[in-house]
Length: 259
Image (tube, rainbow, N blue to C red):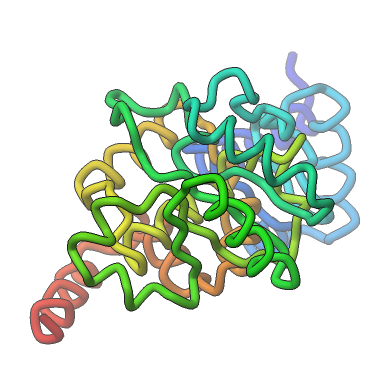
C-alpha cells in the first residue's frame, strides 16, 4: 500500500513537472503560490527531497528547474568563423574585458549559418574606442553601438566587419565567448537595433531551435536581457506562448495599431 505522504509528494512533483516541462524555471515564491494551503516549511522540505532525488535542480538562488543546463557549454574558439578568431586574437592583447557573442556563440543551434557574417563583439565601455582603432588598423570596418545611425547607409552596412557593443557584466561568458543565452540576446539586439545581417524570420527560427534543444535557461535569458536593457521585450517574447488566446488577440490589435 502506497503511503499518503508518498502520494502527496508525487502529486507535488507532477504539478511542478508540468509547469517546468518546457525548460522553464520557477522561483520559490512561484512554487509557494501554487500551494497556498501548504506551509512554506513543508514545501521547502519537499523541494529539498526532490533535489536530493535528482528530480529537480537548483539553478540559481531560490530558483528550480527540471534540468540543469551546463553553463560552460559555449561553442569554443575552434568553432568560430575565421574572422571572429582573428578579432579574438587582436582584442585579447589589449587587456580589456570582452567576449565574442551572437552567431559565433550559437554554433550548433542553427539550421543554416551564413558563410560570412559580421563579428559581434562586446567590450567594456572604457576600451571600445581603443579596440575600434586597433581593429580598424588591421583592415576591419568597425561600427560601434554609438554609431548605429551609420548603418542606414547601405554601403557601410554591407561592408561592416565588426559590430561592437559595450558591456558591463562579463560573467555571461566563458573564455571570452558568450554563453548561449547572452549570445541570443545580443544577436536579438543587433538584429532589431543595428540592422545586423540576419533576417527576423531567421532570428525567430534560431530562437525556436534553442527552445527545442533546451539550450536556454529562462533565468539566464532574463539576466542577459536586463544587462542589455531589453527586459520588457524579452520577457514578452518568452511569455507569449503562455499568454491566454484572448490576450494574444488583444496584443495583435495593439501591434497592428502601432504599425
